[in-house]
Image 1 (cartoon, rainbow, N blue to C red):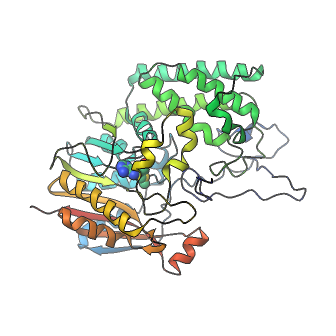
Image 2: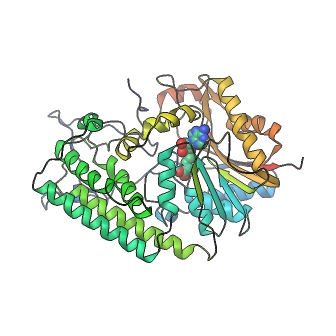
Image 3: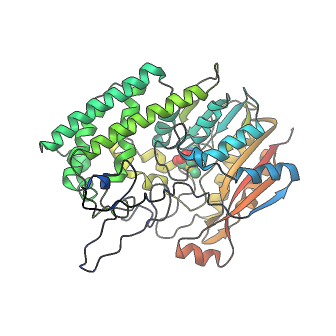
Length: 448
Ligand SMILES: C[S@@+](CC[C@H](N)C(=O)[O-])C[C@H]1O[C@@H](n2cnc3c(N)ncnc32)[C@H](O)[C@@H]1O
């Protein structure tokens, strides 16, 4: 059964399939990022400029505004994103499908809250909102049904202090040295049963080296540093895949020298340590650590009226299957997908690519009811939502959110909308000439 969404990589961007060369083999392209194993190919290959990362779908273009003029203008300015934030703090640490642009999170929190306010993200995913909220001195609460999302969000927001950062870098370097050495000496670890299907995803020597790294990170302490080490391994996996929907487009042809996965693992830990140190410097003294928990946005573990602001990007109808997109990460980290598959909302139905209308609307009403319940009167919610596919038809997201929010006392205030490209032929047919847009929807909790 093909469970992974075809044509998308882990950031939800279109996956380009490598073109066969004339002799029928797949060609690798030279160049790449400083961490790119292709850089280690020797002097005979010309260096090409790094491939542009397309980690975010915020691509620019005209913005259409609606509702209360001043609030709408504020929303419109949020789409003027600061690209430099994409890898600032801990934002570049771990890919995650449907990530919110950090610049939108930062601008929204600054515009709609005051220091000390509680900001809640009931679909926090990898924790972008939480990072920005703590950096601005807000109390942050994040909930997500995905244990992977929660683990990444925790790693990105758990400050380690100077000693912890140093320990992270030193332990990662030690692990990398040992795993790299084992790989260079061609010492093969036993392939555990769970990893049998991974044989198809990686070249054999890469799989052995990654399994060696895994053995060592799994033996690390069960504390924030140990957990961060495990996430460092999870964050590099996809780079080394040769096959599968998440694999880099030149994965099959890519030659990866022994020792490169280990080196990249250590680099990733150093990058996380730098990001956490920068976040620590940015976070005002006295800001509480974000509370991050696994949970269901339809039953939030928070008292009524306890939040000043909800900032969230709920799943878009029928767009991603977060369990399928991240299945390798679940496997390698030993996380169970079972409960998540039951809870996850809006997952693109296999082969069809849409969700059933009545079910989707009922679920949307349930999470909107929870947002309405936890917001204090006059509190606001900013939801980043994209037009989706419901019952095989294009869904206008603002209409669905307005309808679902009304019984919860959530009144639309303003919106800013921007068109998103339609890469998928099926979506092009469904949207038939009309734009598919992403929206920033501002709602306000009316007093009871
Ligand atoms: C668009 S992503 C959020 C990404 C996040 N803003 C970030 O920057 O990483 C939507 C998230 O909703 C989560 N989700 C799906 N169903 C859920 C549910 N019932 N309760 C809580 N979270 C859920 C998914 O696991 C996914 O992480």
